[in-house]
Length: 296
Image (cartoon, rainbow, N blue to C red; front, side):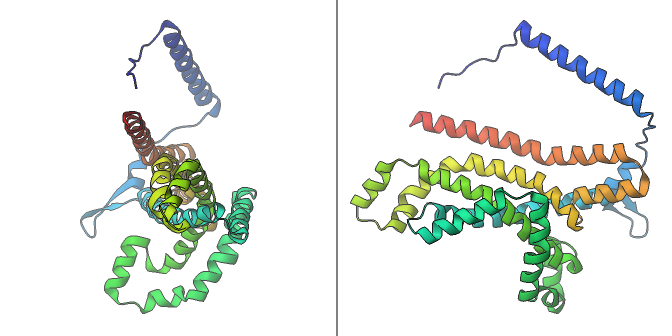
């Protein structure tokens, strides 16, 4: 692939100046019309606070919400990948029943408003599964050192059942989109690869495991990484079921302090700080994969 040098043309400079001027004019107009007194003096306290009793720094409410969002995103992202892989393989199966199950799952999730799905999954599915597994009673009977490990990974012990329900809810929601990524990745592998591996005597599962999936996974990685970034942003929706993640923490602070714009600006900055480095990583990954393919 030929390397191209980036050049800034006069037209690019004019567009950039125009956009900068429009942004400044918009900001000036909003600041003037709002008639709002900005006050950032208390904001650092919501990120980090000094605990005088224990003589140490503690995470503020927004930073605690950020940690919950990270835990929620990582766990639900892993679980959604598992759901997506299974349902994606169902979608490409030759079994009509498996195809129907995979298609029904994707069709149900993708054609229903996310807000409704969160309520249905959380109150009717997540709660039922947690009750059937006995998670509510189990977490309190575990040894202290196990509870401490769970608290590090999942948050406060008393909130673990609700947190796991939210993880399951978000994983089911994101899993439908990963299902389609897996289906598209498997179907993108050339038909000749299936025929060649069949000629070598592989069963269908053997063809998938040894020939098709290794090639499909390479093609799926950028899309899967992009879906994980979406999971971080979509995790804000579970704030409606009182999971104390970043958006919920912002709403609580806004109700208590009436510092609406400062708090939402901080929340926006924290989400951006989480997702933008990942976006750069995905772009770098795509570039390296394109170089690898072009080098073959």
